[in-house]
Length: 316
Image 1 (cartoon, one colour):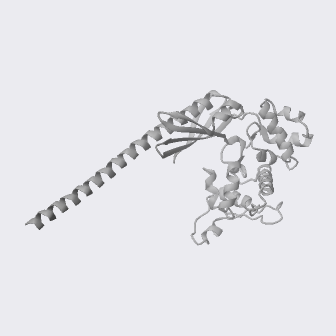
Image 2 (cartoon, rainbow, N blue to C red; image 1 turned 120 degrees about the vertical axis):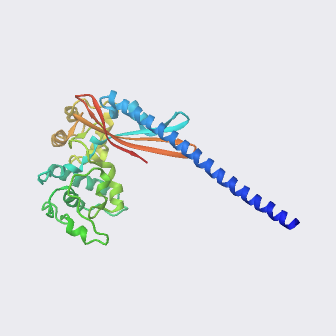
Image 3 (tube, rainbow, N blue to C red; image 1 turned 120 degrees about the horizontal axis):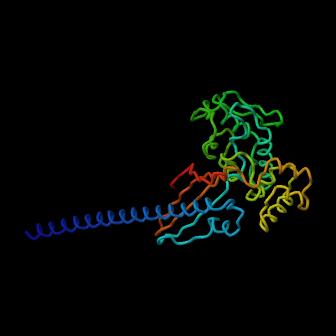
């Protein structure tokens, strides 16, 4: 009888321990769910702050105080969550969708700029494999509507693209996109696009804008891609000047030291102070009790109509 009673007590203890464990698991899950929901709401609030800042400022990236605030490096509190906002102007990058027109006509100026960017990036990374020119015709074939392989005769080697015939013969076959890119990440499956190459080039290319580079927010390396005559020293002169005082006119560039007339003309042809439609990539982040939520959005700001459109929204 005693053995039976002890057995019943042990069984009840095991059941109670199991119930307690399950209850704790349920409570923890509910707690994490509520924290994640609160963190997401805080990240959305941060995004709305960024939208308001873009709406109310003509060129947010040339305003030093705002640029520092929205660098992603500074954090602030929203309802108990540690939040940050990063704003990047997409008009300061090379638009890959403009390498060719919808009718298949090559945009030589855009292609030359991308090739120049590749040279600039390769010069600054001597310890890694060089980015190959072949990704350029391959990107063109990836976005054009036809199934004819592009050949760029002004490139001596590695000048052929790839269409569906190439991709269907891969270990895991797929078809060529043959349509404009929705995001920069769409090029990861392009022939010759390694992980290392994508990581090095992704910050300098975009799928938004009219192709004109915003001179007040472009990186030094993007500025160098405007002309092969622009070396790091000349790019530094331009960057240092705008840090002191943003350019109000492209004509101001020709007065800078080391800026020859050829350099000025190249910049004048490819750069602007303000585009009619400005595109901004926003990354808002909220951390609450070790739970981190990120939101990425792309905004289109029409400077004439003074409207803001959210054209991409992703929760990570």
